[in-house]
Length: 219
Image 1: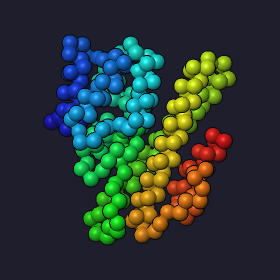
Image 2: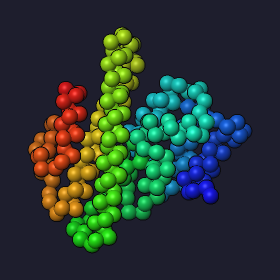
Image 3: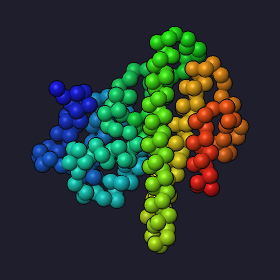
């Protein structure tokens, strides 16, 4: 049986691939995502995600992508799978937060019920997994950017890579703050920001070390 995500993707895909060639071009990805957004409650991607996708589409406009190849490319550009992005986009009590697939739960004061606690715990686990994915992608892009710089890549390409790396770093920082907010909400504590300048927080939260490691790599 085809799941909801596959049904939505097939419907949007058939609009773009109207001739049923079995592939679309990279330049068609932004339009495909716009079509997908018409089938879900919230957008699958954020503005930052859209900029990265648009940049890729302009770099390789005539790259052919099958449906499976599109799924893989969506994962690499946005940082989460298309199915996860669809599921999160259809959650009625969430709003878009991150590249795709990550949503921040609305904070409505103290939530003490066992069911709500379990839901937030599951969401926290998902975010932990996704931040590791983002961290790996950030490190890969950073190595690739340094490689291009070493080999005297032209200014335009360097700027594009620098922009993507910057967006990845910002995304990781935002996602870490989401995790901290959820942890704080679950534990009944307040998050105390030490400095907005370097995005560091008190070491009372375990996941803060991720931001510190990334800041040290970029510095």
